[in-house]
Image (cartoon, rainbow, N blue to C red; front, side, top):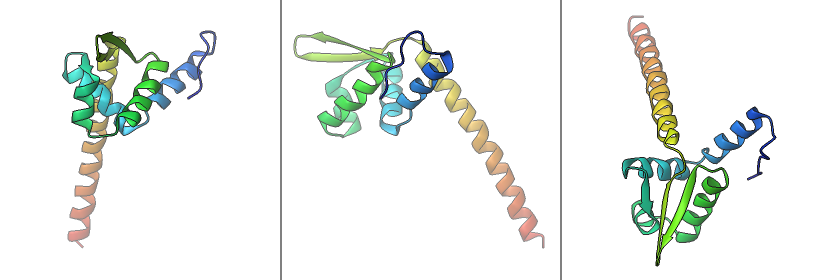
Amino acid sequence: MPYSPPDAPLYEIKADLFKALAHPVRVHILELLVAADGSCAVSDLLETLGIEASLLSQHLGVLRRQHVVVATRAGNTVTYELAQPQVADLLRVARSFLVDRLSTQQEQLERAVATEVGR
């Protein structure tokens, strides 16, 4: 994933953020962190996600490079947390947007089916 220098235009930095979020596993990781009040041990993430440790490490690396999550180590335990609480807000807005979009599509589908049945 390309690194955005701090002086890059904001739209480039935003695009890199959205690229970092553009994988279902990474979104799932973030949702797990939100559900766990912002932080979670790697061992818990591995257990919940059911993926290989190396794959989880790669996904966490992408999120770290874009400053979406941060890691802390206490002994053998590595914990990840959201870098900013606004990440949870971003996920909530995305969910709301998608629910609204799906609702609209469902209504359109129901109208189309009703029209087809009425013929």
